[in-house]
Image (cartoon, rainbow, N blue to C red; front, side, top):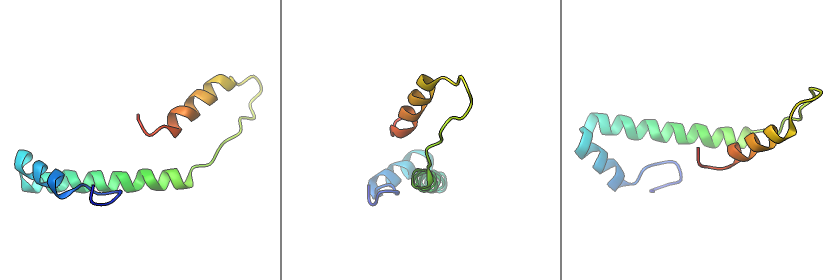
Length: 72
């Protein structure tokens, strides 16, 4: 990658070759905007404490670990 939020030149070129220049640029820009939004969400993420009586703590821990992992 050319930077932490963008695609490399070769990735952009491959998109342009395979789907066309306009569509390739659109896809690359979309990926870049999505990556920026994900980074912003990671920066602004807060931990939430459950206050509902009887809520399952196991589910909360599982969801937190899935969200913290970078693979969805």
